Amino acid sequence: MKKHFYIATAVTAALGIAMFMAPANAASTDPTTTTPTSSSSSSSSTSTKSNATKDKTKKVIPAATLVSTESYDQPLPYHMKSGYIYTTSGLNKTLGSAKDFAKVTWYAYKKVVIDRSAQGKGTSVWYYVKSGNGKQTGYVWHGNLQDISEGTFDIAMKNSDYFSKDKIITMGDSITAGYDGYETLNSGYPTWLARYLGTTVDNAAYNGAFLGDAGEMATPGDLSTTVNDTNFAKYNVATIAYGTNDYGHTDNTIDQLKSILDSNIKKMKAENPKLIIYGFLPITRYDNNQNSDEVTGQGGYTMNDLRAAEAQVYQDNDVPVLNWNDVDPNLITDANHIDRFNDGRLHPAAKTYQLMARDIAKFMIDNFPQDQIKKTTSSKKKTTKTTNKTTTAKKTTSTKAASQY
Image 1 (tube, one colour):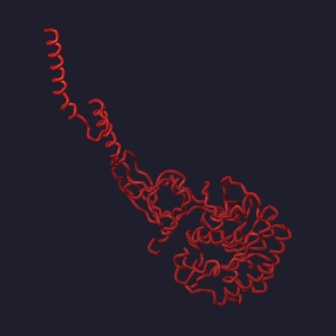
Image 2 (image 1 turned 45 degrees about the vertical axis):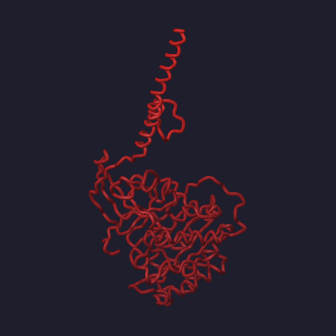
Image 3 (image 1 turned 60 degrees about the horizontal axis):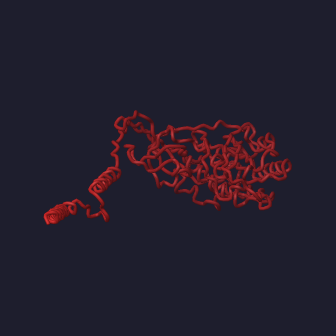
């Protein structure tokens, strides 16, 4: 009897303890946890949440300090080979990486010196840049920018593989040479052409070169001299762009110029029957700030007369001819020539050379001979380059006053 009493008492006591402890256990349960098993799991959950909150907290990067700024009157083109572009000179927020902007051309408008002591780094040179279309701006360390003529900047156009493994020679005057009125740039249209067509371009142009016989003013880059000195069997494609110097500086007649152009085209074709030739007519010039299209020059003809004469010779020889008035009538106009020409008169600015190259590349692709289109093309990325046979191309920073722009 006593034994049963002791057992009943023990059971009652145990139940009482359990009932007393139950509310305490219930109070420690996390209401957001569906199946808590112990107070240790609750502690783990709280710890995980705390860590997650810490992970979501953005690290505050102190702003760098702008030390000095130097503006460029003519922005020159680059591409990003590595690193990041930052939204402000504080260098504490990125716009993206070189990979994000792999096909973007950046124009450097300012050189700035930035002190990064607050970020644990030293003072260095950066560029304030804008994308070619003007939609993005930012700051890039100078060492992460590369001249567009260097590296593997791949911006090849659709169907540029027509020119795969082809070698191109460009012949012409200062405009083909890449002269901007003050310096011969590394970024003339032949350099861009190599990028847009994904192939090799040899630039044989020469500052001041002539289409016709210029007598004492003759240069090593005149059409007849260049044709005589070039082995066209080495090339697949050739471009011809002369005439503006003949109009401005010689008294050669239209018929004389036509005859010289015709004979040189025939010689080129005789040397290489498969050579693809393109003819580019002269762009409008603005002597004394006047549109020259209908102004009679020394030879007794206008620029429009010269264009018509050249076009006729090209057509007679089955050479596709690029007329800027047809291909891109807004490239150079009375309203924009001061900005599009670096000297305001004749020689394109660096950004204009890029626009010209895009038009030229598209024209060359659209007029590529159908019977010479390659049946198979390589999918490998091609390395392109531009060489200059007769001029020393160099990267420059113009020293004109910024107020002129």
